[in-house]
Length: 84
Image (spheres, rainbow, N blue to C red):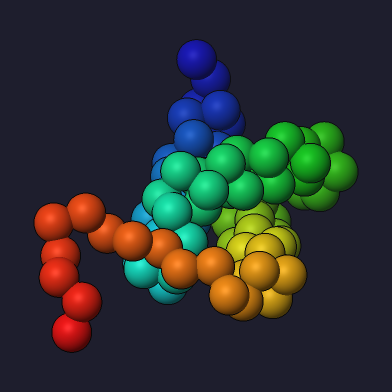
């Protein structure tokens, strides 16, 4: 593993945590993770490596917002919690 790939892994993980915190309760964690991974693959070799964090966050966030807009009636149920 190179230093560059380790750094990219850390950036992807950090952005995933950030977006999960923002979208928790509105989208399943698996969907957020999937969007982050696919977005990272889409950006690979298309941008300067030092821009990965910002571009991954911006594009991933936009994609997650679009998913929410396309299915506004979808409700995410969190097991073990009772409705308020």
